[in-house]
Length: 577
Image 1: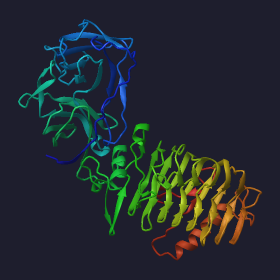
Image 2: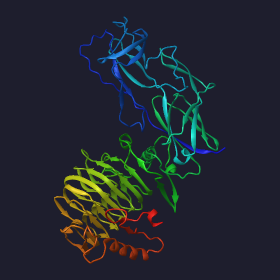
Image 3: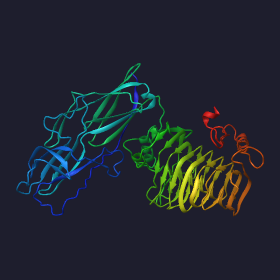
Image 4: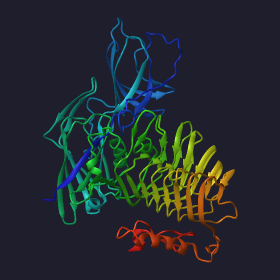
């Protein structure tokens, strides 16, 4: 029998809220039942904001009450903001509270919580104690737990079907008080056919020490494993990832990435650990992205910046993140509260590396937030960004001081990287396609088809290079300038820029200052011929060959190709092979 490693991650429950409007002169003894909101299944840590669903007009519930109000399973219909049906006109005499139970869909003593296929019905329940004479506002939540089993692509490709058997079933539900009894002898299997996305979602009883036996049918036979015992709670959504022991540790799903962003900042996340996402390579922890991930709006809301640079805390990312050529897409990045450096990576520390990663179709939403450095990839880089791209993205950050496509400020090294088709909106701020401020090194990079037209001051590569920062072997292509702009650099300080290329008949550097510039050449965007008669890609590769020849076997700089796009791009690993 094959054995598989299984990790379960637990995500918190949302407590339901309700808002209804009634006259301030409600008579205290009249029986009024309102409230049609329910808490959705909760994904994420307990700190997440409340998300409610709403039962539509015409919904039917069963309503039970004892104590100060006696109702035995009446069917009520939601109409014009109230639950209507056979209810007493007045509360009972005295001051006793009412113990309320209500269910959607309507549920009676002889009803089953299972459907004809042996699966739990998704029942919304409300249990409340209401002070005598008050308006009854119902607040519903899911009675059972929801679990999504995420089977890795390698394992899922083997499946024909999969069978889940929870260790406990529900023997009875007493609707008058909501009490549930469980049975461990009779077990109802849940059979599913193979799903292309590898996600299998179903309901389980909200019971303690419940485990789930799993049988996976393949063309070669049956594989058996088990989701270990866990204390499941009603209304909560759980994620269980299943993969074979032969599969590498790494980040496979959006939920994995969300968990990683919390754990790397020292926050607990549902019994998960950083060891799931990486391994030590040459003495350094390396986290790996194992496949492309597209994020939903809800998933983006649960992300934390990787590495924090707050007004009262510096906790940079200090390890290696290897995207392995994969892409994170459809991200919406919000500044973190009191964060000075904002991006997917807030703060990349001096010894850290982020490499081989693409961010696509993503947006930095900085409206209403105040931050100093902002970018899609990294707010501040003091380490190494290597082989990274941001493409088809936008940045809106009127309250940031410095904005870049890749990094807000660079004090380390950015190499073999690019910003393509990035739009930046920042009316009074300083911006650059690669980085706003460069105090480090930018080598063998490019910016293409970016729009800085809605910025005040901008540079095609960066706004400013200073403090002996350097820029080498880079080019810009069809960058729309801001109100004041340098095709390559807006403002110079102490530092150097050499062997760089631009396609517009305007100043390469708007205000040079003490910046040392060498071999800044124009090229023709139609023929790609530079002003010295050589092709742009040839000029770029001459520099790469020279640098790599002196670097031994490492060869840190990527070669260039003019075959795959409308402008020269770096050769991918696949192209090299």
